[in-house]
Structure formats: C-alpha cells, structure tokens
Length: 379
Image 1: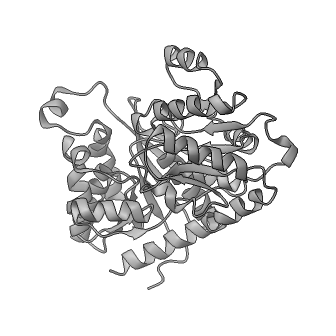
Image 2 (image 1 turned 90 degrees about the vertical axis):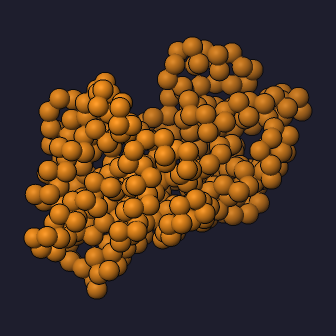
C-alpha cells in the first residue's frame, strides 16, 4: 500500500519552539521541513502555557497550541498524571474532529491520546494510523513515575501502533525493558545548515565543544570537566566551550573553571560556527539514544567523542571520525579526547566526518517516514 500522494500527518508533542528547544523539537521541525518540501501537509499539535488556543503557520508548518494548565492542579497531583499531558483533554477533541491521515506522536502520553482517538474514529469510519517515535531509551523508573508514560509505551504498541526508536541501542533497551519491538529510524540532520567550514576557521588553540544541555544531569558535564583537568596537565592550552546554562550562578561557576568558556548556542548559525571552530565535540552523556550533537558535529567536519554502549557509538563508527571511550570515567574519556585531538589535525578528517552522516539528511529522513506511514496505514 502506497498511501495518498499528499499525506496529512498530525505530529504530536507536549512542547515546541520557542518554549523548549531540545532534540525532539528540532527533529520534529526538520521532519516537517522534509515533508513540506515533498508536497505533504503536516500539522503539529502541542501544548503551551497560555490560556487560549493558538493557531499559527510557522515556515509552512501549521501549529496548533492547546493551553496547558499551570501550576499542576490538585487532581493531577492526586492521580499522578504527567504535567506534560495537561493539554491533551482539549487537544483530543480537535483531533477527533480532524486527525489527519496519521497521528505521529513523539511522547508517550501523546501516543496514548492518539491511540484513543484512533479507536473512537474507527467506530465511524477508517481510523488514522498511529505512529509513536520513542525519542530516548526510556527506563522503567521513568515510565512508571507518572501515569500515561508506561501506557503510552506498552499499551499503544500492543494495540497495533507502529513504534520507532532512534538507534539499535534504544531499540534494544525498549525490547529488554518493555518487550516492545520497534523500527529504527535515526533522526534527521540538516546537512544544508551544518556544513564544514574552511580549515583556517578552526580555533588556534585546541578546543573542545560541549553543545548539549549542561543543566541535564545525564549529560555529565562534571565528568567532562574532570577529564579536562587531566588533559590540561599535558595540554595547558586546551580549551572547552560549553553551552551556557540557564542559571546565572551555574554560568559564573563554569566560567571560573580554568580553560572553560560558556557561550549561547541556541541560534543555529552560532551552533554551526561553534562546531566548525572546535577541534573535537564531546558528548559524555549516559542513557543517550542517538546524540544529535555528535551527528551535527560530523556534518560540520569535526570529529566527536562519546562513550561505548550508548547511541552515539553508532554514529562515531570508527577512529577516522572520532573516538569511543570504553568506560565512563575521566581517565578513559581523557585518553579518547587526546586521540581525537590528534586525528583532528589530519586534513582528510573533515571529509571523512561529513561522509559518515551523509545518509541522515532531511529529505531522506522524510521519505523514510512516509514509507513508514504507508506501512502503518496498511496494517
């Protein structure tokens, strides 16, 4: 079954720009760009902290923002409902009226709402297909902490929804933890925006880049700082550029660390330039499904370092595009960074890094997702 020539997928996520700018929001925006370029008509339904429904068209993408009550209500507290699902009771009414061809959820509670809408629509006609893209490797503690998360992962899959994950690591975790099988669909990388720069555009001093959220404990900035201290004993000119944390106190504390400078990387051009100027991008995180910053760094010709046993190890596929530290400790990380810094001086590294992610472009990703929609609709 090939499906319609022009798809009308409804993308579902609790948040979107400018309220939140994380990997999921970026992946959704890039998927929408690819779908729009191919003549499809995607729509995004999300929540926002306002009091009224907002309907906008942002760079061709129709965005419907439903109000999300704040603060958490007493009912939500008593029933352990996920606060990120607070907009869904109202949003579901709109979805019942017009779900589109596919309900494509990027968060478990949205997937649960999508499945319920599809069941209700089945009573009066052909229901939309339901696709749930699991954007991380969820563990059981996270899933059972609030109502709707485990159900959105397990019950939705058992009800016939198509489930995707970002990497083999994430797919294995989902199967081992929840006995849910998934299709591996890596996130898109904007290969037009993230491109290599000139060789002479790199920092004169060896420079590391940490482009993820320093406020997230799973990103393990402290581990990177410990490795930096070890490296600076042999490389006193080594520098680390960090994404600026939200707290002024945290920002000031990081800026006092020898060799560390915090910068604002929210702007895509600033992020691209930071990738280009760095010698190596480092992502020391744990429980990382893919590592979009690693892929973007390679797209800009800059090698990357991450840990074994995580999603980024599937992106850094060999020593010609970076290094994989075998164990999550400062010594192993420092050795991997040291080796990657040496490879960064090889003029051929830039082209090898770029080639390693050439299959992750937006257009290819959109076509892969459309094929997934057709398969899901024909199930």
